[in-house]
Image (cartoon, rainbow, N blue to C red; front, side):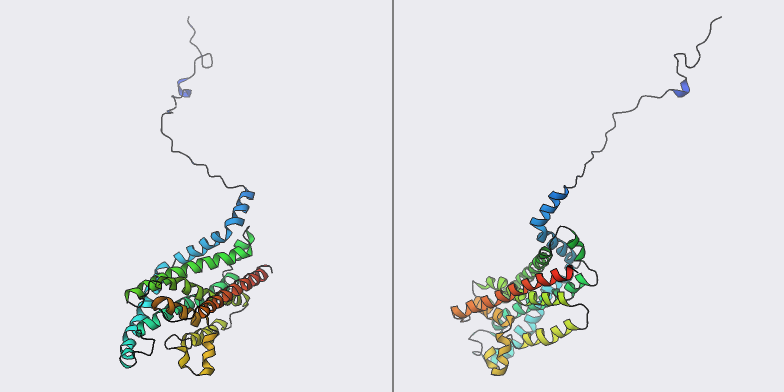
Length: 304
């Protein structure tokens, strides 16, 4: 009698046999993401931290980019049509030589350009700054990272400066399309307008960082600083036509200094070299003082 082999005696049962594994299937490529070493990330933050925060601020602005674009285009078109085309028709007919022999449109266009940067700076350096400390507290997260206080301040200033540059360039393009910038140096009015906005905005940034509670302070800034500056800085008429007891508003106003430089560049308004230097120095000094005060105020608030 022949004995049949039993399971486990060299023959594997059919139920336990497995077919060969198919190893010819194409596997998707895998990418290994590796974070920088902590020291490397800290070193990069020390070198580029201002730009990192500027990128963050620009990404926030990107959420309402169409609103910003509509404002940048609609605001100059509205003002230039209303003041430079509508009102200018009456002004030019009755006083052709009252503005140095140029049209009223050419006279007010540089002032409107500088005014636009002032208005934008007044918006961006008030409530958004307070928001970073009080409501959304967006400054405290970056401050807990390797970013320094000065990088947060610088990054936000860089982002707003880029916005002012874009807005001023669009504004100047529309001004040029209206024929209100016959000079070949007119494009230099763009960086002058940006400097004008920062010379007002950076001191305002330092003040906004010191505000603990919103009790209408920023409404007072708009009502008693921005509006008088807009009306009494030679924006719509030469400053020397005002009574002497009101002209001082223009003399201390960054808007008047920026407007005079813009007129000199766009249509050759006669400004002595020494006075042009004073205009530039005044704007630069205001911006630098505001920047230093902002850094000090941010450090005090974030250090609490």
